[in-house]
Image (cartoon, rainbow, N blue to C red; front, side, top):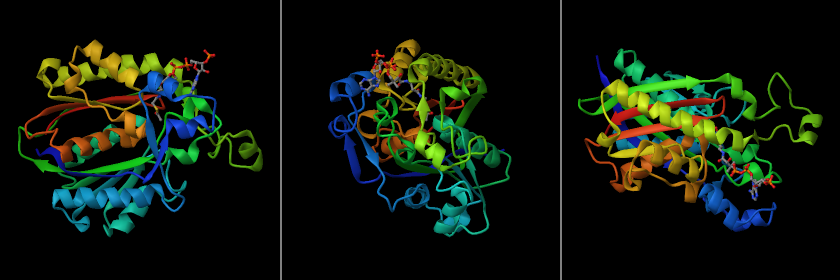
Length: 326
Ligand code: ACO
């Protein structure tokens, strides 16, 4: 049995920065409110020519280079996204073509903000059972394309970004030690995009109603997010026979700095061990954890042998955690 781990990471953020001051001009909000209630100061917004797949290709090339792997060596590409280029084909297929990874299996996975951890878990199992050697997992979101810049409850939160990681066999003690995933569809209407699918196909009426934009009951999700991310974090630690005190780094999904703080307190961790970049990227949904991972890998924040816990919560609702030794 192979142990799967990260061989290389890469990310791609659009150049355009949207500050809280920029949003003050669009909706009734303030830098003070956004900073106090979310911890976000700025987020990125893709240019019209950029798409989920074009940024994914950029991030993936960096990850492949770091891993020392060529695109043609990939056995599987998993693109986690809820903001694909188009309903079909999959964004993963477009990325596969752009990378020149012809012939390998490629598919999209939709688990919102938990998507990268869902993708990692699928990759781990393909590698562990020998079906695949090298798997590229991408977390890619251009949520600005689904934001109503008249809705202050969502447009201040989300940002665009993409990151990717190449997974492959690694020598123990490195590698993925435990994972745990959950979904509870009962909360589906707490965070959703009503139109554009089979339930409410796109029409001039849906556009008129703004039904193609993200709708979120943020306040109700807040408590569920904190509780779920704490529980699932403890579950993976228990599975691996490890304690919170053993962790070197905790990377939570960057949903809201107050959510991160609440989980940190409940887990009893010191701030130094909890990574946060929400102030400059906002909530990038499934790109959030891999962007953090890439920042930590590039800056040297993650060192070989470090025990890193990642946990996420998102629309669905979905939640999950992965415990990994770097
Ligand atoms: N600027 C100013 N005031 C605002 C803004 C804003 N941008 N947004 C909301 N308000 C107002 C509300 O209208 C409300 O006013 P009222 O008291 O007069 O009615 C007041 O602020 C408080 O609103 P709440 O919704 O209670 O604000 P809260 O403190 O809960 O913060 C937030 C909102 C940031 C969305 C928070 O609830 C949150 O982060 N929720 C979790 C979201 C989440 O985890 N989503 C899942 C992951 S994302 C994914 O899967 C794609």
